[in-house]
Length: 314
Image (tube, rainbow, N blue to C red; front, side):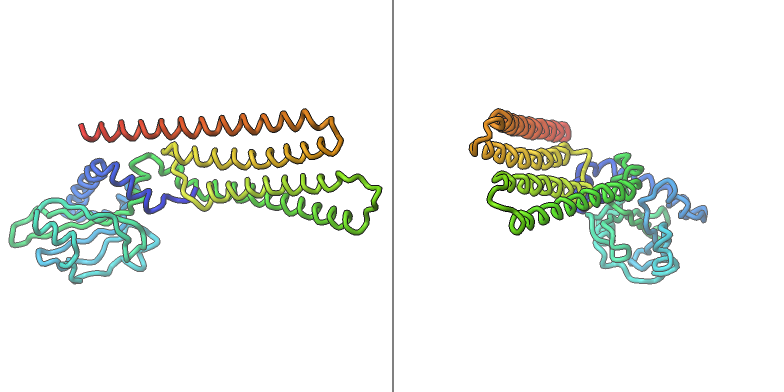
């Protein structure tokens, strides 16, 4: 459940590019009006938390005035700086010189904030001799979260990660306890057992190892899926991936348990035969159900994506 990855942000930007550009156009108009009225545009960050930086350029590409930083954490570094710096070689300035209309950059990593961002530049309404341009930098990840209505959930992400972290820690502690039991039983089996002891005693050790493996794999899956990796809840593939990994863990554990139970039956304890068969059938059923789920889920997502592409084409 990490914050949106760069590749996901770029994909979402391409998907919602028209909506994003329309929103930025309206924000640029508001900022321009604020400049004319000499208002403090930094107050807009309450409504648009993705805004990062605002500055103006003259017709030669020289910055007029200092930066206006919207983010409090960057004000010491970026605010009241930048006056008269030459930005004429920036791609967005070259593009607006050629078109003289609002332009948007492709996503890039900002040198100032180290965030994935885009810049929008707009000609200011002024006499030709006083032509200037308004530039605003926005954090692309936060902009997409704002567009998709995902801002509140994104802000809760640290708390979710903390909760999952506690759960994963408990699971790993349980694994350590099981391994402690395993090593103790192995020591007893090697040094304190006699020939008359139950020959199936070793199987109980394998059961503990299998259980530890299953719990460890479950904790690892939660750690990767919910803490370390970004999980796009708006895509079916991310949910399908999580369910597939979780069911795979169960399949491995049940398969090993069924195999051990079958060994016990083969060594003379016939009462374990039917449970072993039932567990094998359960494994087969889970495997078939998982295959059907993955196939139908992938097919449904493909149809949905094709439908969206056709809608855009039309």
